[in-house]
Length: 287
Image (cartoon, rainbow, N blue to C red):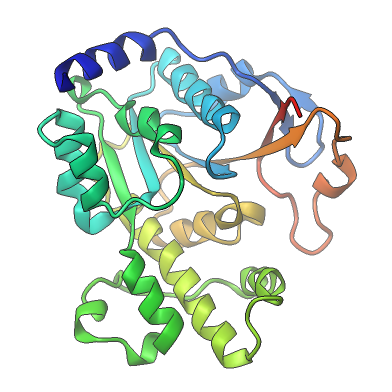
């Protein structure tokens, strides 16, 4: 049955996924050609897809990007925010068919988001072409320990999992994070601990992308939550501090409903933070 599932996926992944949305320049908000933009991405780039978690239209947009990159000759590797890097062997076993999906999800301690929204992205790289899927993030318990105790009071076990040369996010990122968390975190001390946890989240992903064992002309597509990539301040910034040899492209995926007016005014570059991303992929779902 497992082999049959992989054969079915292989067949349908080659059929392609139509883009259900429109692509806009993140600076000018002018509509741009999806095919032309993907064609302009050089081989060896890191493409950050900032998503709203757990939505089928967002997933189709990601698969459209992956298929269009492949149609343009890219060798594609996928990096996933939701996957714990200490469980990379489980990812490899699942992709090879030697680990069942239920056992894989158990090992990964998969959370509340339905796995159906991420299965195709994880299975997209073709092992026969040497393509890989990478687990990027730290274990969730580590983030919990940092949020509770702070970086200066971590256990020996936790310290071993931190990326080398750890840096916290830049000040503009911290300001945005503080504004987002203001209604949930009451004290400055707690806010600092939560920001340390957020920074370790980004730093661990950036470290694993930078250290990924791929060729220089291999493209890496990273599926990650929106806040981590917006205004270039989280993951893209942290990654560029570690590795400057690869070009990066940031695409933010935004979901609206057909009875909403698209808030282009709110999507314009911020006077303080700049453009939200290089490109905005806007999909509209029927309400």
